[in-house]
Image 1 (tube, rainbow, N blue to C red):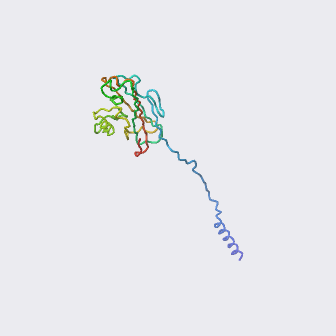
Image 2 (cartoon, rainbow, N blue to C red):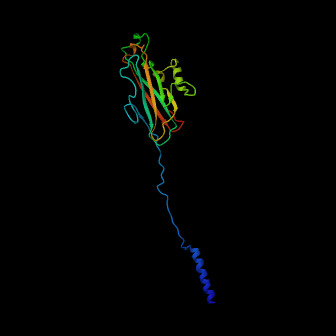
Image 3 (cartoon, helix red, strand yellow):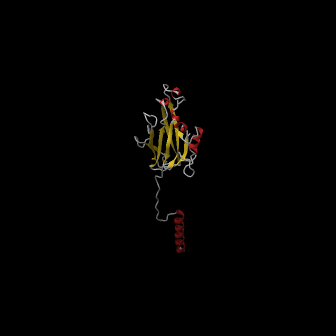
Length: 219
């Protein structure tokens, strides 16, 4: 009888241990901490002959003593993506402001040359390896330049006046982490122009837009 009673107590104790979960198994708990999400950057810097890696540059091309027959350039502006995000493309926009010298007008030439930008021809314009003036299929059939010429005098040459407010879209973007692309421009003025442009000023602003998505563009 005592033996049966002893076995009953032992069985009760085993059941109690199982129910109470008091096994002495090994365990080890670790954590994964400091999990962060940081936004990358899309940061366009410009540099020219006088300034390096700026948010904007000034007086990258031009002439303070322009005269008939002059050629200006090539002048270059380097675009650099100092950010960490890969961009989709670059857009370029041209804008002019013209200041006419009223001392010289159409009476000096027999025609109104109030806007000197009509006489400044863009003889070379490139972005990286892309010739922006080329209309050769397979190289760069530039509808933007073609449209600008057609809206002007449609003579096959591009003037600053025809480029005014033109936006060239979807050019190759410089690579992230300090990739660069060089923009270059050369202008000339015919030796046949006369006194009508003396003292005139054409101020040109070139805006470069670096965009992450193909749907984004300068306006």
